[in-house]
Length: 495
Image 1 (cartoon, one colour):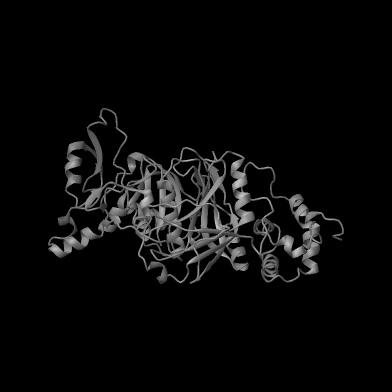
Image 2 (cartoon, helix red, strand yellow; image 1 turned 120 degrees about the horizontal axis):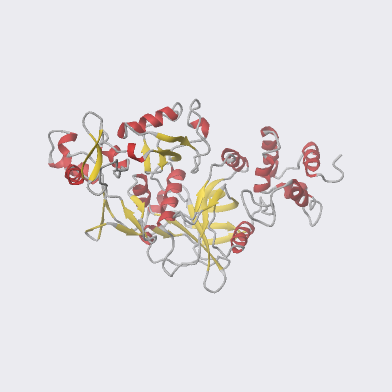
């Protein structure tokens, strides 16, 4: 299990955690391997604001943390000087923070903090530190002689290849088509238009992965998409995947905070309903098939920012459980020049997934490019490149549309701070009261993903399971459950 730790001085990574038994103490011990003198101002938390501390007694799994999850902490910067980790891969994966707070009488321009052989933090001249760093095999790594005494050419080439990426364009996406539910996508973009797309937002797409050898890439009802000439992959790559098509039935927007200071434009917050949402999706025969994000108008050719590319790669890695083929898709919504709203779909290449998994890509000053971490080397057209254009990683996915035969999308969406309507019992009453009109049944009006998630706060898990099963199979909702729901909504005739 891999856990990422975002501190106020940088991003750290702790590997080799046991999924079932690892605790906060194991994470702290993992950090201490390379930073033995670190002092915490605020311990490990589940939220970026460090307001929700993790339990020190429960395992990480019981606290909802999975492989690749992010936790947060605040530390004293002057205590975070790193020492080389025992293995080259671990050393490369753990970013270091060499900048230190100067002490009285010292000059920050020519002195740096280091850890000596006895584990003590000392101030030494910067040029001396530079000489020590230059001895490393790569930035942040041990010198070759410190790894082992004898090296063959094959040993050296094998080690070096682990940190070198020869950039190859992926010509086709694994996902050959994504079909979007019209009511869901229309409601999402309508909300964004209230802010003129000046506030960025994201959500998760729930639906099904499908295998269809007869997928057509053109459709008269297809939404507007822009062809991107900078696309990537093997010609026969899609044939290796068990699925090649996505059908989206619902959108769920997790808790998030708008933050224009971040590269993403928002900060994902801890979601106490994460497991419930996935459980409801599973009961409905759905799974997480993609994610959707919005952005402001951009110049022509600027498709996804480096932050969005890295985020897309992380989600694809999670969906594929590694650097494997997956049809997991990224959908973007933004205002077009003619006043309409454009919807596009993409995947990032498997090479991008591999580089993000190794933390070889970073967010740089130019959002149209990903920076290459100093420990790694990217070779483009036979030359080393410090950056890679985002479009090089992108493959276009054609979009078609449909109206879900299983779910509706009328209940107010959860986790929105500003909206005309909010989830409530009154809104539930308004929705359920339409049953018996225009051919709607009670079950039809209940078949709303966000309404079912809302009900999870008021129903026992077993009751919610049975309601979801009835929605999925289109069976009549039992009179007992109808009475409970009508009473909850304050509908007349519920008694």
